[in-house]
Length: 301
Image (tube, rainbow, N blue to C red; front, side):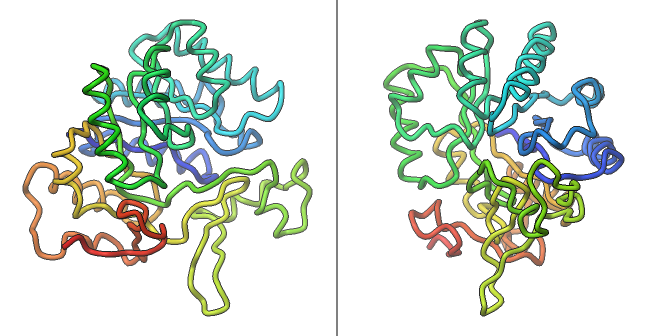
């Protein structure tokens, strides 16, 4: 089973982004997703910069996937999407992660193989088969669905004889929703088109807590993330037995190298079975996986 690193969701400074990937080149990660997926105004790193990082990681032996923006809202967004697809089209060693139906449409027209991310709502085997017939090679299981749903869908892929990879998010902040409004700018009373790039002040997003001081959400510009950190470390054996080929970790500021090391130990059978869930001091959640409220956490008996 392979380990992948999802695209950075937060608005980090270019120097920090490059430092993160320079370090990641030596980590036991097999697949790396690159690119700005959240906000079109975050343009500190251009496509050429992402391709430079991609080439560096490819030379380090990583499989590289360029991720598209999740919410396409304007002709400018479409132009950037077309430019991304054109750049990958001439470098067949890379793939595109489609995070919007616009990307799927353009990739299918060009008959380019592609990957889908969390934001593409693949809720049944019929949808999966439809996209597979249009070039889908790997899909990322939607975070809000349960393991029983995944089991059913994987059985259907066998019945339909689809040669397709399945990827499951197992660690990191859960991407919950995207909006045309920028919540971080709104919090500071800025209009979206003149946001002052205020979300760059929040390296891990803007925390939203209840009156009882329970962290429920993290606002990341136009994206809403979970207030807890998803952790399916104790489900790795179950996930592998299902036939899942890739598990994904979403980047975070907190002890990311230690997290990668622990999941690598788990997948290779080198992890201690005593307390395999304690990876960081963040609150963890796994409710969706068990068909419960997403923010809940339980240990599988």
